[in-house]
Amino acid sequence: SVNNVYFDIDTAGPQFIENLFELYGIEYVVTFTGPFSTRLKECGFRHLQTAPFSGVGDLKGADLLIYEAPFKTPLLVPETKIDYGLNDFSFPVSKKRYYHLKYLYFPAWRAFFNGRRIAIKYNKYGMYVSAPAKGTIVFKYRHRYCWERTYKAEYVDHETMSQKFQGL
Image (tube, rainbow, N blue to C red; front, side):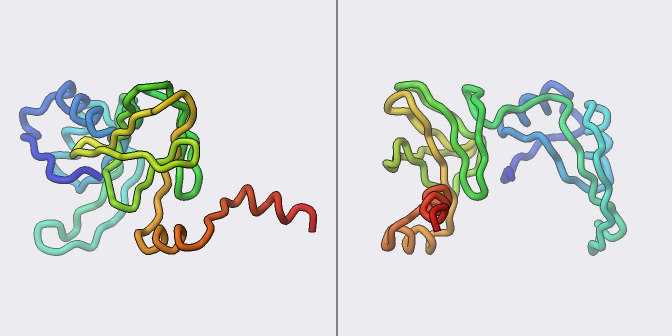
């Protein structure tokens, strides 16, 4: 999700759109029928699906259209393999290197290196973390209330619990 990115679709060429989408890590676009969807098609975006929309006013009767970008936009720079879980993800890191994750920051995100919390820096282009050593950084997302409860109680991950219950 990207907030408040405005540009003139009549003058935005394919290279401008590619640069903008790469900056924010956008691979898919949901839009309404109209000039923007026409421009996306002209720029090589692939139409994936159409969904009826029962909007109001100018949008009444417009369809929602889902497009896929014709280029790859890495979500992590430098590009690194990301392992996804249900509400977390992890990636290998090198010592003393900054990593730019193109996800919008929300206070419910936490980053960990070897089980210790590390600082997240952020701006409108995403989140940034620094690796203190070679290893793995884990991002976890939980509602603020859950973080408070998690750290008042002992947090035990699914793998640890599965190992404990295997012997029963």
